[in-house]
Structures are given as C-alpha cells and as structure tokens.
Image (tube, rainbow, N blue to C red):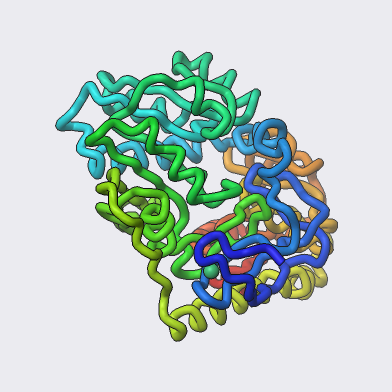
Length: 390
Ligand SMILES: [Zn+2]
C-alpha cells in the first residue's frame, strides 16, 4: 500500500468513486480508471491511492493540450488570469520591484505570464512547461520557456529568480516535497515562492479529477513547504471581490533558515473526521447524480446541454446515462464541437422541432441565474445545484 506523501502513514480511508470504472482529468480527457482517492487516516490528506499517478507516465507531455482548446476557454479564463496576476503582484510586492524576475512553473500556453506582462511590463518573465504543444505556443507569445518538468529542466537553468510561481501544479506532482525542494536552487536569497491552487478545506470539484493526486488544505500546503525547506509567510483564501478565483488559495513562502526541519503539523482528529464526512458526502452526491438527472429528464422529448466547459465534461464523465440522451450543446455566442456533439451559439440556433429541456452543464453556483434566464424564455431547465453541494 502506498504511503501518504505528507505523514508517511499507510492507513487510508477510501472515498467513494463517482463512477466505478471511469474518471475525468483536468485536461478533459476520460480515463478508464476509477477516481481512486482516499483520505489519510492519520493526517487528513487526500491522495490518489487506487491507481498510479498519471504524472508518472507522459500524460502532461502528451495529453494536456486539450485543456487550452476547450470552446471559449480563453475568454472565460482571461478575467481569471487577470485577477490572479493582480493578486500575485500584490502578495509578492511586484509594484515595489518592477524589474523582478519571475519564473512560472507549469506555465501552460503562457496565459498567466501574459496577464503579468500586461500589469507589470518591466518584469523578466520565463516559464517551464512539460507539454510539448503548450510550451511551443508559450514561446510563440515571446516568452522564454523550457520544455519539461521542473526536475527535468533544473540542470539547464543557471540563474536565480526573485519569484517562483505556479498555478494549479503542486497537486498534480508525483512528490510535493521534492517538487518544492527543487525550487531552492532557483530561488534568489530574498526570493519568494508563490503557489496558487484550489483550497480543499471544503469539498468541491477539485476532488473529481484523476490527474490531481492530492487535495491540499492551507495546513497541508504550509506543511509541505516546511518539509521542503521553505517558510510560509502567508496562506490566504481568495478575497470575495476576486470572484474569478472562487475557491482558490494563494501561498507565499521564503527560504527557511538552515535548521533542522520541523515536523509538519497534523490536523486534529475531529477536524479530519469532519473533512472525511464532508468529502464522502460530496463524492456520494456525484455518484448518485446520473440517477437524479435521469429522473428529472424523464418525459423530455428532446434534451440539450447548456455549456461546453469543465462542468459539461464532468456531466459527460460522471452522468453518462443522462448524457447519452443529450443531442446538442448551446454556449452563448460560440459554435463548434464538444464531446462529439454540435455546439450552437444560442437556443434559437438549435434545429427546429419540439422545445427541448435544457440540462445545466455549468458550475452549480451559476445554475440559479442561468435557469431563471432560460425559464423566462419558456424552457424547462434541469438544474442539479441542489443534488451536489458546492
Ligand atoms: Zn498522512
């Protein structure tokens, strides 16, 4: 049995799988393996335990381009990356050091680098990215980008950076302490390590992806940093006014003074138990979603899905029987293909016929507003924000 990467325990509490033999990755690729996650009985860390980590193969090298190719994703993400760059700039004090050097680890196609360049034009920006396609495209945007994982490119980098930044990377790594320790040779003496990712303090969609090997609470994130030789300065949830970063947290670390590394703290038993119960409840809700949606769609002659993003992919993966009845998708102002279905730019653009019922293929917390709009136009909406908690 695999050990816990945080506390080395081999005692696991298995979490429910939303589907017995399939799961979704964050690049929207279906994998024919269950989600396979467990919570460590001794420290509360969620880790993928039933299958090997996808990052041990060439998943990120070869299968991460689709993340950036989803319909309308660039428009959807532009505001999120703008807010992220602003927040990173604030916590790393970039306004006070406009010529700082920043290395983004896992820079994808360079969207955060672009947002940083727009706000802080004098920064020296560079990136590291494992995907062959994504790193090529980031270079075409004018950024210096090395192709590979941090560990692979480390010997090629002979300078230090003021800020080492990564967004949604640590939970994908195959060894978080090693990943963070690999930052130290690249970090200027007074440099900062800044990481953003989803906060796993309460269960949410971050649990649902098979390429995320870990779910990190602020305590686990700070503890991993300490074990790697970094001292946490701040671990903060996204402020509500930065709505694009809903459920995110951002951590800032500096180099720790050379000293025996402290034991990483472990959350108390009551809070571990509460987290396990809420995670188990959340994943059980996803496991029951297909049946709930089929019940709500009963009697509908035609079924369309509104959306073509991450939550539509989650429905296609974890509610396959309901999804099999969906004949097309609709996304405001977008046309194209999604999951083998035609995407229409408006409800009016759908082929003529019976008025369809509309499945809400969007984030639970925006379903009330979207369904109110579509119901106002006379459509029967199939919501599920009451079946799955946020
Ligand atoms: Zn543990």
